[in-house]
Length: 127
Image (cartoon, rainbow, N blue to C red; front, side, top):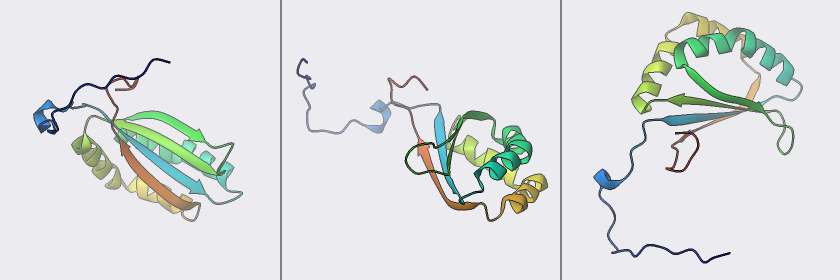
């Protein structure tokens, strides 16, 4: 393998205007579901939660369950045009009474939830 050549640096950080700006952000939401409740949660979510989220949040990129490693995990990835777009869409969803009714149905199913905002790098297939 050839050695990686790094460009020379001046020791100065690039200005904010020189850094790439991405028009898309991705939100990764990881849920650990209580043991024995995954199938029931997925059924409730698919029938009731997902239609509401798709109406308000827009673009569901992926929805996964884990089979190796930590089990009983669900990972959902949503894309947004910007942080502001995400905030506005989530605010609208939280104002929807149907969403609150759905949350009552799945109360007690989720042990742990983690959320990360991801920004693609220049060579990422997803932009």
